[in-house]
Length: 277
Image 1: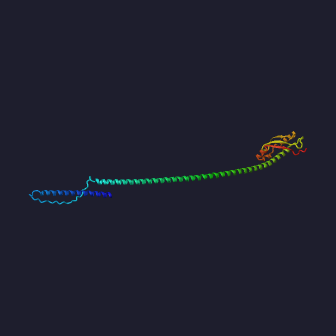
Image 2: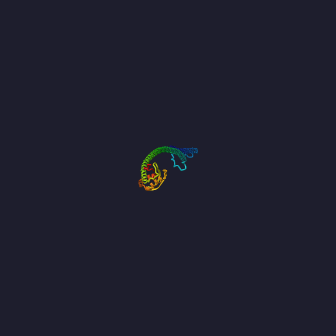
Image 3: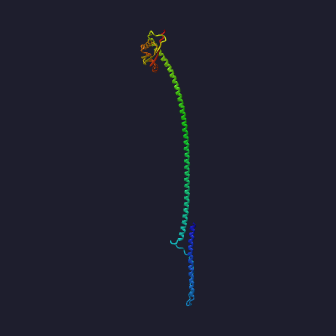
């Protein structure tokens, strides 16, 4: 607005200068006319000339339309104003750009800080989760190891108890088997003694040990004197008594283990009860 007012004042000043110039020219013309009239009055008065009076009148000349070539002062003012506006606009743009860059920088820093905070938080949470997982796994391993130790201890206890039970049962079974075997051995000895024919040289206190080989059917396969009585006739009579029996069918009732353990190779001490002399 100040620039427009200044331009208007300059235009008004220009118009005023033209008016003054025109007024000066009119006054000069008036002076010339007066002087010319004065010289004419000095001539011989052959004729009398009535002086003509010129009335000067200030005429206000309206300014013509400004030609295209004359607006140099106005163009200069406009150029200065435009330069000033451009400079102010550039300064404003620079300020706006600086503010925008500052906001962008602050936003980047805020985002970077938020990202760092988030990464640090996530790292802390991962480390916490890893510690908790490791603690749980350690507790689970320790519990599993404790359970395994307890199970192993219980297994050993069970094995020992089972071994004790089996040993006890085996001992009981062995005692029972031995009792059964003894009863069958007594039966065989009685059968052999019933088949024995006493030799004339037999005397009281004589005995011999025989080894009798049997099969599960109770049949005699072989008989051998392993410990002599000192009397050959007594020993031969014992062998003949076993061979005469031929078979002991009662052995079929024995369990195979009892037979294998006691009667596959039977050692029989032959000591007849009727030896009195």
